[in-house]
Image (tube, rainbow, N blue to C red):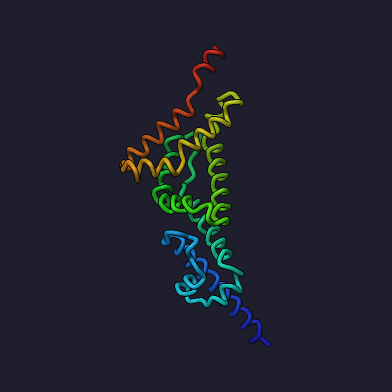
Length: 204
């Protein structure tokens, strides 16, 4: 009687191991393949050593595999942006650029393909929302000093001043070094957060 639970436990462990291997393989393929839409179940099967039939039994489709990979990749990417104290602009910019240096090229490739793959569009839409929430949180001390009607426009401007495309422009297109790029980001963010002189005069 003890044999059956043991076999069930071993089977469950093997199933989980296969699942983990499939997801890790899909993540690796997303990172190295130029077009995510070109990734096939055969690719995942070949690199993971798990049959296509087993992959389908666990994830139902190619998109199911990719969706699981994106979920894990999201956690990985979030870990690259080290938490910083709200209000510390220099630390926030430095942490953001540390993340961009690690995943910037992958992010740009994803953006280029966004409208070819609906599940990729959903993932990036979620990432945009998360970035805006981060801006609201990390720059709250400065934003709270502004009149309420200015806060949403400033957050939008902060988004533009911290967007991955700006990193690409400076690092890849203009070929600036990291310190120059960081200085440019910092200058832009500080400019967005600076009090409006006309509002200051009104209050004065």
